[in-house]
Length: 187
Image (tube, rainbow, N blue to C red; front, side, top):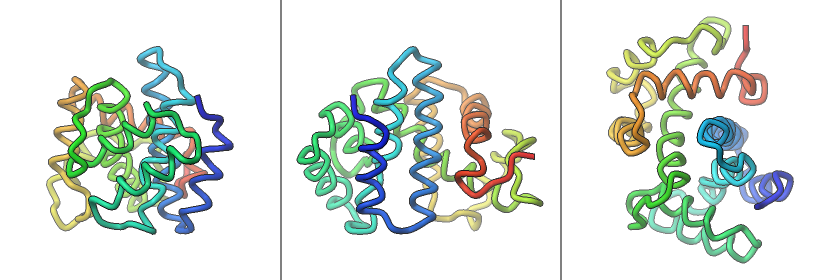
């Protein structure tokens, strides 16, 4: 286990961008919610979500991201299980997603970012009331949030073994309580 404060200190040491910190916080919230659903440790799963892109500013391209970041995490005492999930969230790192933690991080990464982007363009930047059909409609719009890999979104739900609409609804529910922390309004 890694204390949240330790994970946050690593994140903030290497990630200065407010938008990347908000993304980390969103993925952390999604991972904590899935940990609760699956009876797993929310601190471990939350740390994986928080740290998955901590090295992105330093290494914005693969394979340096996340491979070089994994070396830093291990040196900072982050448990191997979390480091492996961070590596496995990037297809090009060549690490198969073996555990439920690995699959959940992959499933939560792109979709958490996408749901966040959809909420940001809603009137009032409100996440409350956002529905899966609205998110699906935006997924079809290739010009919207074009850096989000749609195939990763679909593959993530499949690998996690969840229906995409249910996964979208779950992520919306996970992000709602942390909405003010990630630049969104709740209602």
